[in-house]
Amino acid sequence: MHVTSDHRLVQPLPHTPFYCPVPSAAHPAAEVLNELTVDWMFRQDLDTDADQRARLARCDFGGLTAFTMPYGRLAPLTLMAKFHAVLFSLDDGVCDEARPTAGQLAREVGHIMRAVEAPGDPVPGESRHAAVLRDLRVELERYATARQIRRWVDAMRVYTSGLVWEAECRRSPGQPSVNDYVTLWMRAIGMAPSTAMMEIVAGYSVPDEDLEDPRVRALTEITWTLVSWDNDLYSRNKELLRADDDLNLVDVLCHELDCAPAEALQHAVAMRDRVMVLFLRLRAQVLCDGGAELRRYVHDLGQFVRGHLDWAARCPRYRVAPQQVTPLAKPAGWWKHRPADDSADALPLPTISWWWDQVAEHVEAVRHAA
Image (cartoon, rainbow, N blue to C red; front, side):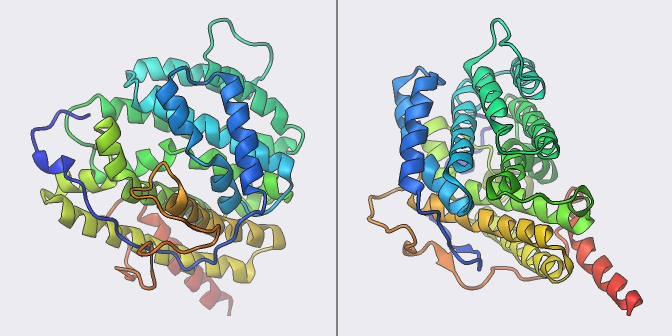
């Protein structure tokens, strides 16, 4: 935990409902996916601590995969669920709990990146996470084109660079700025390689030039950010209780704005909802004028945002009180129909303010074309 004398940063907060008007969907193989993945995960010996293995078994990797990617064949979906399991194990056991230095984690992610860049023979002394990711990278070749594998490897670089930055933040006094935290967390949460898997699992391929469209790049980053902020909002109390962890959007805002946690929570929800509104506007534009593969991609980005929340609402890892829920049930108090902030103005954060420019620039381009 960061060195701080401010007692406000450890106060638990009530749940706040989520605004996400994207229809829910789920792959019917969720339970099978989870059983296959948990069994596989235990056989990989990623974690030796019994408590950690039990926590990971409750993560419902099959549900996470089924809700965020409710399409595709069972085999590539199982690969995605395995990848989720490795990310959770890496995050819990190596990054959060062990509190490595940035240098220690840099060495680990260096081994990981070499394993996925050039998955040849095992390297002496490499970790189980690096070895397992090498095997998953080889398995990926069954379903992905060379271009899709390149994209996924590039996305892994984005993710692992975020892990090193996160390690530096966790061992530093105080909190990062909100601007730095937003940049860090969209990378470190592992969303880049996850969204790179969408087209592989679904069996389509988006042209490079479409993914380089600034609107599409913005939509992709917005998806990473919404998932990372949503995770902060529903997991904060759990992290404070289990890991004494205050590296969270609410607590970063609390520090920067010098306000109580309840007020910081209101700011976080307003920020999150304004970004959700922007996502819906940008996605609608691309759905109107994009090609078939691109339309599928931006549709699936929205499904990832919604599916992540559907999974979190049911996941025992985050559930405060036991409740019976069906696969597409709506837990009481989890959803809301209107955003807390529907402003079209950019958030005052230089790292992401360019997202809002894409709406204005597209409108201007259409006007000139007419």
